[in-house]
Length: 337
Image (cartoon, rainbow, N blue to C red; front, side, top):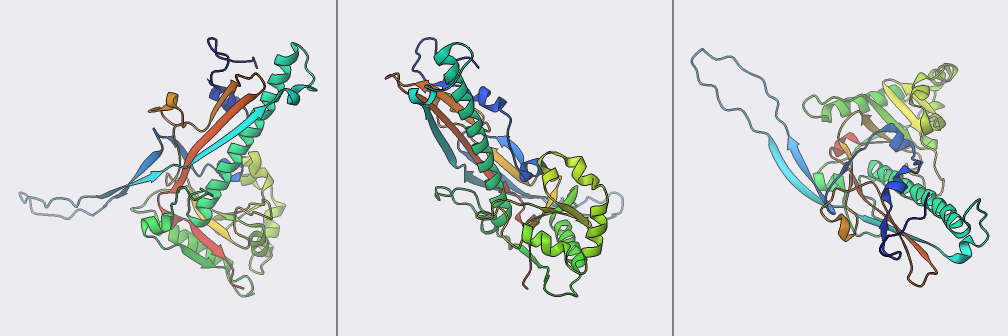
């Protein structure tokens, strides 16, 4: 990694976004599942066209009869703001004083620290995106912890969330029926026969444990574990770290994260369909003059040397909004006992 500065002005801000995006990303389960489709937009807003397509049936008429006009689709456009997530890091002379290098002293030591900062920033941006996507799946709300942007897809789209009580504390509960209820609700709300690949349930460790040890499931789970679990092996990546169980047409996946801040509420799961285009991540433009009216990217990374020659400043940012365009497809699973 060469030490890059402006040829005309060594203290000018330099865009090194391409270098940042080369750094391998450490995403989590949600990214690996491919639920969200990413799309860049120009500026700091995006719109959603709510398009209710009407699919009717033809009726027979006598020849020569003029048919009635078809029913028109319903459309409604909604505008939303994209939250801004900036990050600033710096490198000072004292940070590289003891960094060993194999070549040109200061330049090599600085590049080593820059590489470390890039990895840290890349990891931070990726983790933030993963948490934000989980928040949309868990609560239907936009990730903006300071409250600068507010969005709740249930209230904004006028949808009541579907809840399914697994009642694990009741030994006679037929958990298979609960999964079938989730499948039926998903199919009923895909609108006009929309296609999907399958239904997954992203589970907290408590929910997954109670499911797989329930009387109605224990034997099936034991048999499943004795097999080679082709679904897990096929997905690979970080997914191989998460226990999963295919049962009754649903793939239950345990998502074990920090106990202090679980991404899926404890004792719950979220059913979501795969292979649809209802889950979106919109990336907005950077908050810089040079990116005005340009298509947004996943992340941005800029560097410059302070004119006092005592600090290397790193400015990074990401601007994104996650949204589910059909909130009825996000189903909450829980147990009341």
